[in-house]
Every structure is written in C-alpha cells, then in structure tokens.
Length: 488
Ligand code: NAD
Image 1 (cartoon, rainbow, N blue to C red):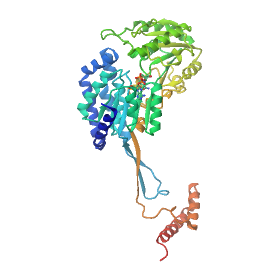
Image 2 (cartoon, protein in one colour):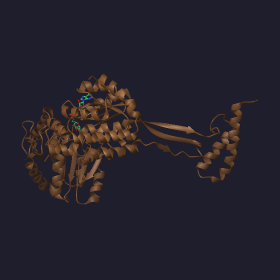
Image 3 (cartoon, rainbow, N blue to C red):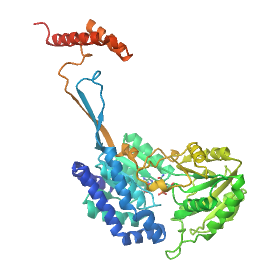
Image 4 (cartoon, helix red, strand yellow):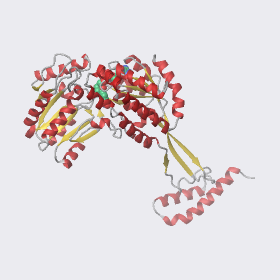
C-alpha cells in the first residue's frame, strides 16, 4: 500500500474512532493486548525471525506483559485526557467558566525501529489510539515479521483503517510525514533529526526518541554480586541492541579490579543463542555488527584491554568487556548498540559523575551503591531522562514513567501523561454567564480610571478599597450600558 492510500484509509477510520467513547477505545485496546498474548505462538515465531532471541526471552520482554502494560497505559490516558476545569477568580473574571479539552490530532504516523519489534510498536500506538487517533504504522524493514503479525491481530480486533501498516524504508517514511497530522519516531539520531526537521517545516507535532550511551556508575560500597548481575543484564540483553543499554561502566578505583574480574566472568558465562537457546542473540543486521567490530578493534588498538569475550568477526558477537577505556575512543563516545561494555576507571564519585555527563546522549543513568540517600543525590546530578539507583533500563516497560532523555537522545517523550502533547491538541471551551458587561470594555472614562486604581490597590492587599470598588463597579457598569445604547 502506498503512503497516500494508507493515510487515506486511516483518515476514513479516524472520525468514527474519535467519536467513540474513551471507555470503548480502552476496551478495544485491552482486547488487542489479550489477542496478542493469545496468539503468542505466531508472535514468537515472528520475533525469532526478526531478532533471534530465545522464545522465553521474547515472551517475557515483549508479549507476556502486554495486558498489564496496556492496563497501566489506560489509567495514564484517563488522567491525561480528562477535561480540566480552569479555576477562574470571581473577582477578575465574573461569571466565566473555562474547560480545557483534549482533541485527537487525526492520523498519527508511528515510525518504529527493529530492536524490540513489538514493544516499539505498542508504546506509541496504544496512547495514540486511546487519545482517539487512527495510526499509520511504518515499521522497520529490518523487522517485517513481527510488525506484520501485530498488524494482522490488530486489524482483527480494531477493524479496518484504525491501524494501517505501510512497508518500506526512508522514502516511505519521508512521504508519510508530508501527509499525517503528528509523528512519533523511534530510531537513530541521524534519521530522527531529519524527521524532526520535516515535521518542523510542516508545523506538525513530532516526538523523537533516539540513541543512547548509557552509563552505570559503580561505587566502592556497592553490593557487588547484585551489581554484576544487574549490569550484565542491562548491558548484554538483546545483544546490547537497546537504546538504554549500559554501554559505559564508570567504576571507582577502589572496586575496579573486582568489578572488571566479575563482569568478565559473567560475560564468559553468557551463551550465544543457538537453536533458540541462550542469552545473547546474534546482531540483528550486518550494519550494526560492523559498527561493533569497528568500535572494539579501534579501542583495542588504542590501548583498551579485552578482558571478556573476543574480537568479533561476524554477526554472532559474544558479550565483550573492555577495560581501561577512555574518552576519545568511539566505544566511549559513540553509540555502539552491541554487547560491549567499556569500563572507565575513575578516582571517586565526583569524577564518575563528570565522566558520565561527558556524553552527547542522556537516556538512563544509574548509580550502584548500598548508600541509598547518597546514591539518590548522585543520580540527581546525572544529565539524563531517567536516573536510577541500583537498576537500569526497566522503566522502559513502565507506562507511567516518561521515557525521555537529553541531548542527542532527542526531545521525545514516550509513555506517561507527558507523552500526550503529541497525540492531542488542547482546545479550551469558555462560557460567559455574566449578565453585566465586563468592566474593561469601552468606553474609557473616569470610572474606568477609578476601578483600575482600586483593583490595583486590592491586588496589593489594601482591603479598605473594597466598598469604594463596589460603588465604582456599579457606576462603571451603568456607564457602559448607557454608552452602548447611545443618547436617546
Ligand atoms: P533507523 O533510524 O535506521 O530507523 C528507524 C525507522 O525510521 C525505521 O522504520 C526506518 O525505516 C525509518 N526511516 C529511515 N529513514 C527515514 C526517513 N528519512 N524518514 C522517515 N523514516 C525513516 O533506526 P534503527 O536502526 O531501526 O534503530 C536503532 C536506533 O534506534 C538506535 O540508535 C537506538 O538507540 C534507537 N532507539 C531508540 C529508542 C528510544 O526510546 N530512545 C528505542 C529503540 C531504539
């Protein structure tokens, strides 16, 4: 289907979908989540073809928890979309009522990446639907199977046109942006920047969620076994092909040797997924594998020490730990998007924060310590969208938490009530039940001067003016009435 036909079809479906009640839309989204879980066997086959993880991993990461995710997203949407009464002062705005409402944008384009092919669709599509939009979904051409499966199940539950899928790459994405009313984009920095510029030209809202180079700060008083387990998971899950993967481990000297030894051992215990069994899937495509190989070989040539894994040669890349990395190496400065941890040793916690913030990205950042108040204070100094103590990355599946970042991670907000600026415009309904004219209406006269002066004094707390003000207001209203009817 062409982008034009896709948007046309979504536009036809948009009006009846927007006219349905919130509860009806919520019910359909609940039914969609349930249908996806029911049909999980087909979904897992599609995910295996797209990303090569084990079925148990994909089930837990992308499918099993969908009903819970959608239930949370519905609660969030209810609050974000509820009409908001504006408290207006009776003195300044007598008889007036204002209510801010949420109006769907119309047709939203969801342009998604390949790394978590189902989750990256669910996250923008569910709130867009709950807000009353129809959606044109343009998934990554690298992960066509899961998107096709999602769309087939969705079409069965939602009916024709509420979600329309278009296949294709850059040219299709480009064309879509010229046709829709809002864009939610998740992907690389280079593409996100281009998408944001095209949306700016069209003056349509756009949310861009881009890359990351997340840091974990490890302090001497951490619970080392738990820290190792947590960092190994957040760094190597999905072969590090996660925008919030831990790519830099910044460790204070006092615990650096133990951490490096433990992390290398953990990496060594991880198995490459073979015949659906194992923890680290192969890299999803040759382009990402090539970046990983370049980062690792350049870092080693530049003095980094390979302590876990081995130098990658193809797309099956084992978990890799590089010790003694430093800024200036691509593996420290650029997004690697692979199962590679760059360990940077620093003197103390202050130096660790400085090092963590010396990045053009800022998605998640974590501090690992047993001293929770100190960890929290340190986490607040991280220039990131989500600052954690003793964990990393999991807020990506919490529908109430704004998934957002700083710098090249982009300005987008996925999930939470803060995401709704993309999905709805705000319209304010104002009703005036005041039977008297407003005091500031024409004409200008001495009574207006009098009222203005007394209002100013009242605002400053001079309550003695109240009686005089009431008299002045009466005179002023009479003056406006006689001015507007004119001399008999
Ligand atoms: P990508 O930018 O190559 O592609 C993303 C999507 O954009 C795909 O659907 C692609 O076909 C489409 N696209 C490409 N050119 C386009 C254009 N000119 N106009 C419109 N659409 C276009 O990204 P990718 O390789 O699929 O994903 C990996 C990247 O995504 C990594 O950088 C990762 O960090 C990032 N990512 C970020 C988040 C987040 O929440 N911040 C989540 C997942 C992935």
